[in-house]
Image (cartoon, rainbow, N blue to C red; front, side):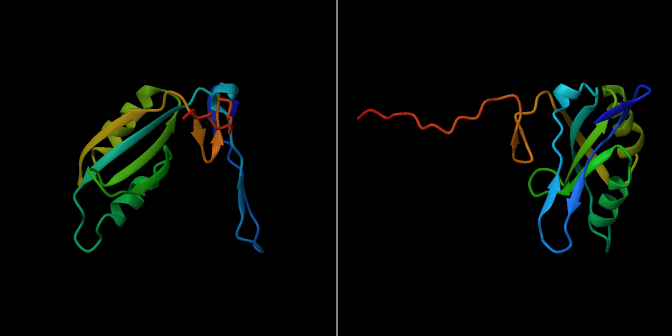
Length: 137
C-alpha cells in the first residue's frame, strides 16, 4: 500500500499466467507500511428480490468504491462485505448513507479488524514453529 498526499492508495498485484492456473498475489503487512486504512467486515441481512434473488443487490453493493470483497453467505446473514477506508467515520458514512438506503437491506452488523495474524495463507507478526510438543505417557 502506498500513500499519496494524505490519501490512501491501494496497491494490489495480481499475476495470472494464461498457460497455467496459478495466480500470484502480493501480501502487504499493513502494520509495517503505516498506510492508515481501516478495514471493516460488515454482515448484511436482506430480503431477496423477485426473480433476481440476492444477485442484483449484491452486484450493486460490490460496485461501491469502498467495497473490497462481497460474498453471499449461508447462516445468520446473507452478505459479508469487506470495506477499506481511511477512517472509522467513513465506515459509518458508508453504512448509513449508501448501504442502509438500499431497499432490500434489513440490517447490518459492523466489525473492525484490530490485528492480522494470518492473511491469504501468510502469517503476520508471529513466529511459526512447526515443532511438535513432546507428549509424556
